[in-house]
Length: 297
Image (cartoon, rainbow, N blue to C red; front, side, top):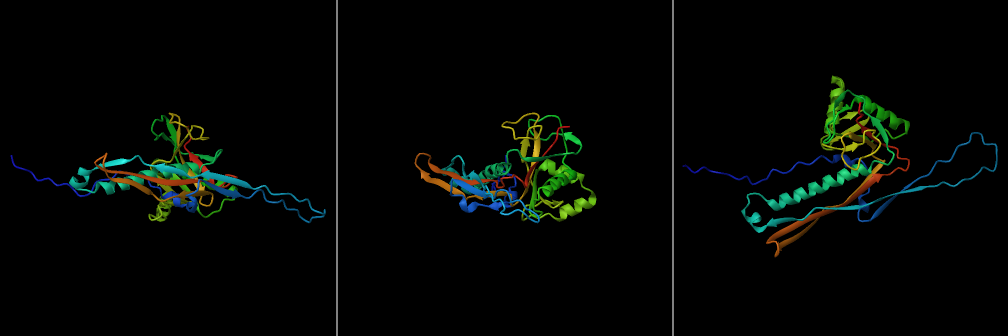
C-alpha cells in the first residue's frame, strides 16, 4: 500500500463568539473600573415656574438629588493546562489560541451582563405587532409576533414623548428579530437601511433615527414582557433593547493574564485570565431605555 502524504496547517479554527460592538454606544466609566462601586448623581425635580408672579416673598424649596450606584464585578476564566508536548509537537500555537479564546469568552460574559445591567426594574416595554411566527428561543413553544418597522416607530414615539435626545438612539436585536425587521421593510426602505451600515462601528442599519446592532442572542422575557425569567421557560419570548447612549454606562477594564510557566506539578504551563467590568442605566427616572419583546398571539 502506498504511503499518502498528510499536512497539518499551522493555524487552528477558532470558536465563534457573538458581536459586542453595541457596548461602545454608552457613557464610558472605564476610568473607575479599579473601584468597587461607581456613584452616578442624578439631579432632582426642576423648580416650578410662575408666570407674572404677584406674591412675594416667593416660597423656597430644596431640591432632592439622587445617588445611583453600581458595583464593578470581576470575571475570571477557569485555568487551562497546556502540556509541554503540546507546545513543541503541535503545528499551531496552542498558547496563543488559548489566550485568544479566554479573551473572547470573558468579553462574551461581560457584555451579556452589561446589556442586562442597562435594563432598569419596571422598564418601559414595546411589544411586537407582526404576523405570528414560530418562537426561535430554545426551550420555548408556540408562536410569537414578528418584529416589524411599526414596532421601531412605537419605540421612537415612546422616546419622543420622554424627551429623549434624538441623537445617539440605538437598538440591539437578536439575529431572528433583526431579519424579521428586514422582511417588513419595503424595497426602498431596505435600500436606505442597508446604505447606513457601518461595519467599523458594528452598525447594521439605521431606521427612524435608531442605529441597529445585532448579536446571535440578546434577552428572553416572561410571556407578558414584564421581567427577565430566572430560568428558561416554554412561554418565554425573545426580546431586544432600545437605548440612548447618554442614558447607560459601561466600565470595562483590561484583561489580566495569569500563568505558571513550566509548572512542576503540571509538567507544562497553566494559564487563566481576569477582567473587571460593570455598567448600569444612569437615569433615576429610567428614561431612554426600553425593552422590545415578542408578543404571544
